[in-house]
Each structure stands twice: as structure tokens, then as C-alpha cells.
Length: 370
Image (tube, rainbow, N blue to C red; front, side):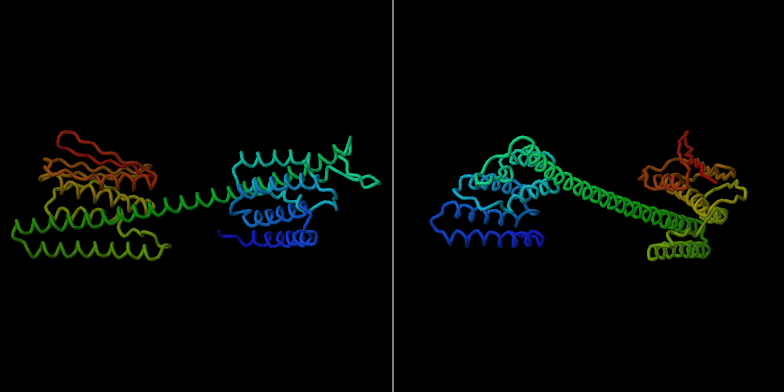
């Protein structure tokens, strides 16, 4: 059994008092009451040893031991005075309200209030040293003091328990927030990797196919080299952002890069028209616009046969980004991960994104805060 340091200190102090009663019993070996008090004293010492590790056991034992002590004290032919063990009653109430559940703590408080009626302090002596129970106002005052001490012990323990629980809830809430932040970070990383690699690899594949089909392998290789270089640059920036939390995911492409993006897809064989006016938006919004257009063009290349794509970017508040691709749908369905990532990205910059399919035209429309 593990004894906590604080409990050990109290147990040692109680053991010293128990040793005193034991020595007294040894000095008068025929006095059964002395041996009973010594035995009860060691019970107190043992209970103090498990105050916080086994609070219910300790609290119940301290109340029961005090009740037994009161009975033995009254039955003894000679009483030499009060005992320090009565202090164990408010200790039991405090421990129960601090470490145990509320129902048990209230039960211990009720037991302590009931014990007050038989507490040694409810008796006193007259001039002839005759022991008698307190009467009248004297009894009421004594009972009131017992109950007041028990109430203070209960409230003190309950207050400390409430503070402890509040700190525990706050710690749990912080851990929940940290876990949510870690999950969001993983989602951000997954979205960035999907957007960077998905777009680049799709473009590289389309450029390779276009080059092979037209016999312009050297031009296709040049375009593939450029696309791979841009992809590597974005991956490096992403890794740098992961290493330095202050940098975050610094965007490397924005709305100003959309014409070049469209041109690369045109070079890969995709028929694209662009209607975009110069706009001034925050970097995160600019990056989101680029990503939305890139993902929409990538999806058109992947999932439609010989599509025609119209890209429109209109300034204002909100900024409207619309990509409509018309073409026969390929038999292999997409996973939807890219579109879900676009929705999350749009929401993260205070906007929204929706998709629709009309005939053979698939439209991605986003409205983003300027």
C-alpha cells in the first residue's frame, strides 16, 4: 500500500500519541480500558496513513473510532481528561468533502453532527470531579460549536474540491483545444500536400500525354520541368512552415499567378478561357483563389474527356471565383477529397464554396471575403 508524504507525517504524529496510550496501558496491565484506548489509538494512526489515498475508508474509520472512544471513555472508572483524537472528526469531514463524492461527504457530515451528542466535550465535571452531561444553554453552545467546526471543515474541503475540479476541467479543455489544433494542423498539411502534388502531377501527366500525342517531346519535357520545379518550391515552403511554426503555411502562389497557371494547362492541351480583372485581396484570400482555380482545372483534366473550361474571377466583396468545365465524364469517379479541401479553404478565409452539375457542365463557385 502506497502512503503519500502528507499522510505519512500525520500517521507518524498519530503514532507518537498512540505510543503514549500504549505506554500508559503497559504501566497498568490490568486496566482493560487502557488497553482499549491504546488499541483504538493505533486505529487512528492507521487511518491517518490513508487519509488521501483512501479517503472514504479513512473518514468512516475516524468517525467510528471516535464513537468507540467516546463509549470507552464514558465506561472507564476514572477519566483523566479530554483526548486529542476528537480533532479527527473535523479531519474526517474535511477529507470526505475534499476527496470523496458529495453524497458520501454529506453522510460523514451527518455522522459527525450525530457524534457531537456523545463527544467527550459534551461532558464536564463539578467541584467533586463528578462527570455529568452538559445542560441548558451550556449544552446548546457546546453542540453549536461542534456543528460549526464540522460545517467549516465541510465547506473548506468542498471549496478546495471545487477549485481542483475547475482546474481539472480547464486542463481537460486545454488538452481538447490542443488536440483540435493538432487535428486541424494535420488537415491543413493534408490539404496542402493534396493541392500541391495533385495539381502538379496531374499537370505533368497531361503535359506528357500532350507531348507524346503531338510529337513535341522536348517542349513537353520543358513544361514538365517547369511544373516540377514549381511543385518542389511549394513543397519546400510547406516543409519550412512546418519547421518554423511562426511562418505557418506561407502561400507561394496567388491570384496574380492564375494567368500563368491557366497557360500551363493550355500548354498541356486543356482548352481554357480566363476572364479575370486585377484585384487587391489579402494574401490568404489570394492564395485560396489560386488553389480553387488549380483544383478545378485539375479535376477537369482528371475526370472529364476533352473538356472546355471557363474561369471567371470577379472583384468586389465578396470576390467571386467560378470555374465551369464542360465535357464527358470519365468512368472513374473522384474521391471528393479535393473539393472538400476547397470548401474548408474557402470557409477558412470567411467564404463559401458550392458545386453543381448541369448536363455535362460541372461548376465550382466560391465567394470569398475581400
